Image 1: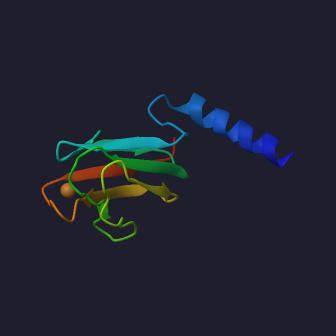
Image 2: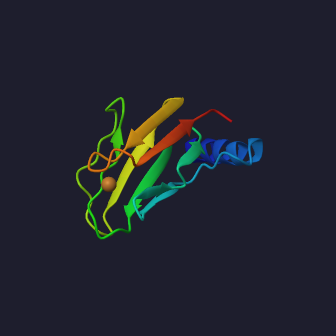
Image 3: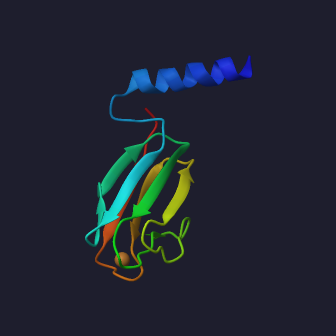
Length: 106
Ligand SMILES: [Cu+2]
């Protein structure tokens, strides 16, 4: 019963908005930039950052609700965004590297 309800909710999310995506959202870190720089997800979405550079980077939320360690090449950092809001973040090593996660209900 519970899993049926969960499945239905996930389906409703997908149907409700083509922009919102209920699966994990990946952000690539490459050439000193976060790509895509801005993502919009529904509450409960896991965002996964993957560092493709040969240089360490971090994912540091401006409000400190999520802060990664220094990520080496091919390291991943994950954070699940449960609450709606706009979460700006940057790389602590290269503060000009910035990105935003928008969390919106569909
Ligand atoms: Cu960096």
